[in-house]
Image (cartoon, rainbow, N blue to C red; front, top):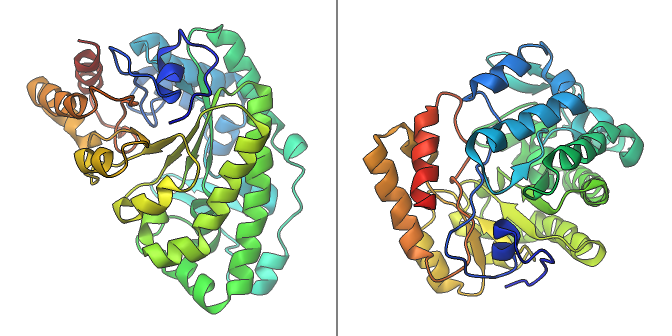
Length: 345
């Protein structure tokens, strides 16, 4: 396990550095979100979601809301995994009731060849401005996590034209027009490395790569056509920064072995993964998670039991407490509070 933290008094960074602490640190994926009334109030000022995440002051405000309300052990930059799409030439629109929609999906080699050249520092300055502002407002209370979508996940939106249950068009491009697929993945990998390096320069103290849709692929296809790109990102960050690295993928228990070779300090597990088996099979790998978000709908005694079950598994090892996926928009705040109370008890 890594020993890269310089702040030995910080609970979150100490666990990332491989320390076993009496209390486990906790943050929640999508902790700034619609389940909070204060978030909805800020969101209402921005009919266009892209305008929302491009506003550093608004991003800072909603990033800090769950910290001020719950006293979490890490903040995560409020942004979106699709920030790289518009600057790459994608006609991206967030449609109410439908979600992200790309009106000019990549389906041919010519489409991939038409990707715009990205000046990461200039084109995405609003993200780095937000990081600097959040760090200033946090004033050293807790660390700030920066993040990006994994190249496969970001590519899938550009190919599918939005969310997909099967990623059929992504696989079709990968298998039938591999030149286009790899050109797109190369483009995204290069700018993601720069994007994350600049987040660290701006003040991010931890980096998380969220490859949400990697679980749609077989281990062989992942190892051949996806994993090498993700590993390049972690290798570049390892060589150029000194911050802990987290990798998360949803529905990807079958890929746990290749994930352990990516170079991340921490692997986030979703609720489908057997945490006890994971820590047995990979004793030197640190994990994050993995409570089912829907547990937070349950009565407090059930939330407490299921959270305690995780704490029992990891009591003798470092671990980052989290959900197995993002908190859902209609989760009751009382459910989040019961989860946090159990960890702190």
